[in-house]
Image 1: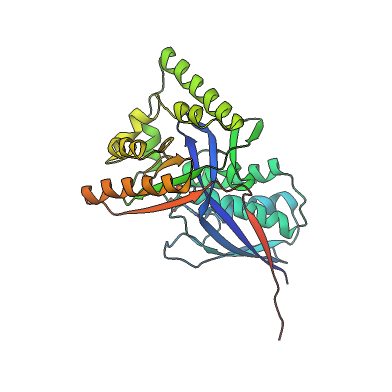
Image 2 (image 1 turned 135 degrees about the vertical axis):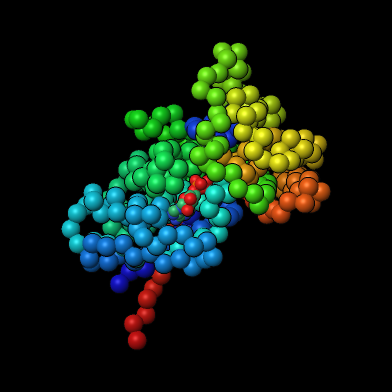
Length: 312
Ligand code: ADP
């Protein structure tokens, strides 16, 4: 029997001006999944954490992805998985994407790497559909590929990896609930042309800044005139956090995914720690519990380790 251990990183989607089209992978937090291949067509899920996620495969993101792989290959193949979640569901740092991407990569590894990356992203998007009602790849692509991903299109799938400088990322997760459905519902259906022009200038600037290693350009381009002004009202302390993080030296940042987490990019660890202190100061003052992470961009995406099982 073969068992593998899979590390699936958290991700920041909706990179400020890159709503639905840009995401990056984090080195921390990271989910761990242990997966074995079964010789009968079923999916067994165990949870090794306190989140009480469903173990019914149809209701768990990882289960849905395994089922979609099984439907594709047919025959008597199944999967047993133990999920140790470190990315809190609903945090906005890609908890569902980590399970979806981890399951797709694990299944592929155990089956002898028969699928390409685009196929893995397609399988994993079935999991995102379960979690948020829509297929989107801005968490899944960076989770699988590492680094920064540009989702130019999902129909047909067209994903581009953008090389990036060694950026440091500070994330604060205030312990409040922002329902993804609410965060989607409050968005305006129409935008002004002048806002659209400013936004696509920023997106192009951000991508160019990443490619050219131009930190000032990255900082100038981390501006969102369409989504953030509407969504940030769901996150207490957002404007204060942003202002004091910039003062502490952050290049810029914004809402991670659909919130409530907020992320900031910095050029080095010292600044990233000063940014963390600024975030803490705001939430201490507001009396809202929070977690913070000071980490770097994960460049390798989901990774797989073989586990040797010794039979006594
Ligand atoms: P995030 O942005 O942190 O991924 P979402 O709101 O998109 O948060 O997804 C979390 C939702 O998906 C929750 O309702 C959770 O119960 C559900 N879910 C089902 N299976 C999983 C899983 N394996 N990992 C994370 N969330 C899951």
